Image (cartoon, rainbow, N blue to C red):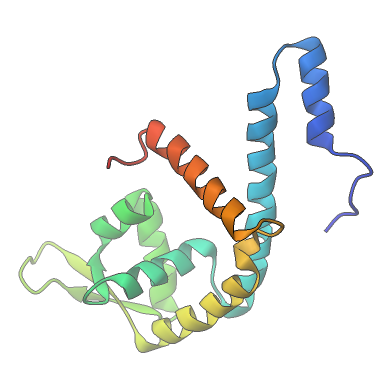
Amino acid sequence: MNRPLPFDPIARAAQLWEDRIGPSGTMAAVTGIMRVQQIIQSAVDGALKPHGLTFARYEALVLLTFARRASLPMRVMGERLQLHPTSVTNIVDRLEKDGLVKRVPHPTDRRTTLVEITEEGRARRAVATKAVTAIDFGLVGLTAKQTETLTDLLTKVRRTAGDFDD
């Protein structure tokens, strides 16, 4: 990690924006979110790397662990992970290569292939979960109440953007 700056560059950019362009509230909020995303991504990547996982592969293992039968069609995985089918295929290919999932035929639909988590996948997911929860998924500096408020605010943005219906 780089040495901390002696000032907040986002606050400085917001002040310059305010002086030269106009209201800076949204710009500062979005820039802050983007920077926090980088911080979180770096922390999560660092926690998952020793376990041979990326966040996308970890999410897939968690999703399969949550599935009633520990398997899902790839199409459903893509919907739930909000990923393009090509990305899901790449994730499953890597997990399968590592022995963490396997492709199995659907019992009633010959056109569908299921992805099923293996025992090794369950074990890897368990140790990786300990690693990411030990660092609070990289989201540090907030109280439990602040984290809940942040989640509520981000959920509102996602809902308004059409990310999901409820």
